[in-house]
Amino acid sequence: MPLRRPVSGRSQSPRARYAQELVFLRKQKGVSLRALGDAVRSDHSHLGHMEHGTSLGGPELAQELDRYYGTTHLAVLWELAMRDPTQFRERYRRYMMLEAEATGLQKYALSVVPGLLQTPAYARDLLRAAGRMDEEALARNVAARMGRQELLSRDDQPQFRALLDESVLRRPLADPAEWRAQLAHLIHMGDEFPNVTVQVVLSSVGLHGLTNTDTMFLWLPDGRTVAYVETGYSGDLVEETRDVDRLRKAYDHLRDVALSPRESRELITQYMEESPCEPPEST
Image (cartoon, rainbow, N blue to C red; front, side, top):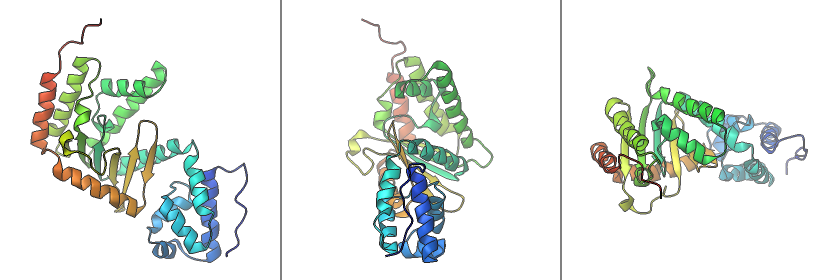
């Protein structure tokens, strides 16, 4: 069994300890990132991100690296790093960087309108519901979300396909006028932006591979595809090829059974027309 340095030490974050141990073991074995990637069936650039601490990879890869090095502690370090409460913020920051450079995006929206298609009113209500923040912080977050949408109209605009679960259309805002404006915005984006496709997945489709998984796929300039899966309170950047492929197969199935863009437009219009013009009277 190869020697290894101690992995304890309160001065190091779990993520840093994991990354440093990956570097130490690879250098001790005297292999390149490319050779390591071939040995564990993983992309060498992804392994490089793991050694730099910008990605954790998945549990299967940590176990595969343990088998390759003849160790048992990498899977333990990976789990500790994943439990680190600071990791959601760091993973989301890295996701934002990748989204900005993506050449293509595909989204399955489980319960809310995707951020790239939200109106300011929708974003404000959603962010307010997600957690406590003062009005100044709320305004900053809404502005940041609106700024993200600029990538859809830039010169090298990426293709963006959004599959909306029908439940998204059944969860209105409290203000009917703002809700109608959000639905109209969905139609506008699909009509006026040639790089944007909006489709609806009917509830009648039933259970499927992404039933409880809100997912975004990013096609990157280097040819890789990564995914980001999330709930309202946590998210995970998925970079391991096997895991991304499994998610993509589920997404492809949904795309095949979703309403066409034209049919989706008609359904969104129907929901908009059925929305009341005034808020319900309080009792």
